Length: 266
Ligand SMILES: NC(=O)C1=CN([C@@H]2O[C@H](COP(=O)(O)OP(=O)(O)OC[C@H]3O[C@@H](n4cnc5c(N)ncnc54)[C@H](O)[C@@H]3O)[C@@H](O)[C@H]2O)C=CC1
Ligand SMILES: O=C(O)[C@@H]1CCC=N1
Image 1: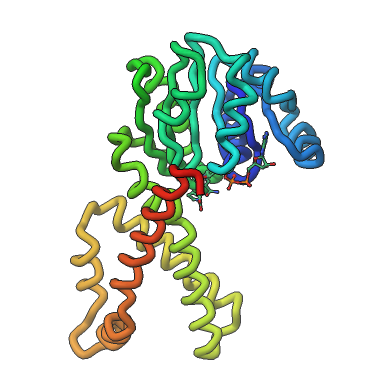
Image 2: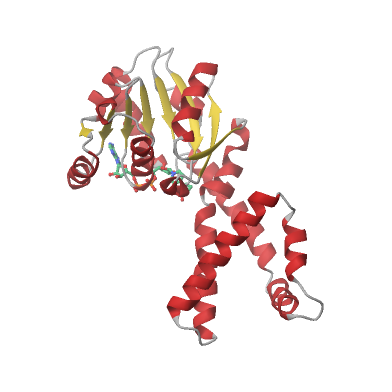
């Protein structure tokens, strides 16, 4: 089975590198990438063939589209003449619906929509997948195995995709923002930057491992840290005063709404 990746920016390379790490033969992979310099970089780094989008579409069994949502219409118009029934098109773009893609590809081409995230780079990705109209179990299983090479995969109804994009797709950025804020706070409190960074990163990794390994509700885990009249209670009161919980809700609503706008081409 040959897989083509069209659009090899941050997410395209994340997918490519994951497939290579998972043992996919490089001669069964190919890349379509508009920027010549970037194309050369990927050829050198992975030994992968960089071809035109049309050649990629014509030769691959599975075509993964990893361009910006605003570029999807043009790319689909370009490759549609080379696609044929029986092929699988996988879109990783935010907002773009399977119906939009199906309306631009030949009949009989199966479409699957995926929302991945960047921790896939370290095989800790979270990907959600939704089938299009002409997609069967074998197509979904193929995409599941494609994405499982870099982390967890969840099947979801497509109507949940905008919310998923807001939570796990964009999610790593919120976490990095929190980490960055805590490191800055540590420096403000007088810690050397390297010390603050080590403390915050390990605290994040340890907390994530507790969530995953114990399955305990985050409220219970938070209460275990919060001693009566202690330091944590003082800090949490400030987070509530500064409406951090409300800010997270508003932020994720904004991301969900932006995903809906991208579906409309803006
Ligand atoms: N970066 C992330 O964390 C995530 C990104 N995505 C989705 O992945 C897609 C790509 O996002 P990024 O990788 O962040 O963007 P990016 O800008 O890093 O990558 C896009 C790549 O597509 C290439 N490209 C543009 N037009 C092309 C064309 N006509 N033919 C071939 N290549 C073309 C660009 O040169 C660039 O290398 C977007 O649709 C985004 O919604 C989804 C989940 C997470
Ligand atoms: O910011 C974006 O639009 C993309 C989709 C989810 C994460 N990055």
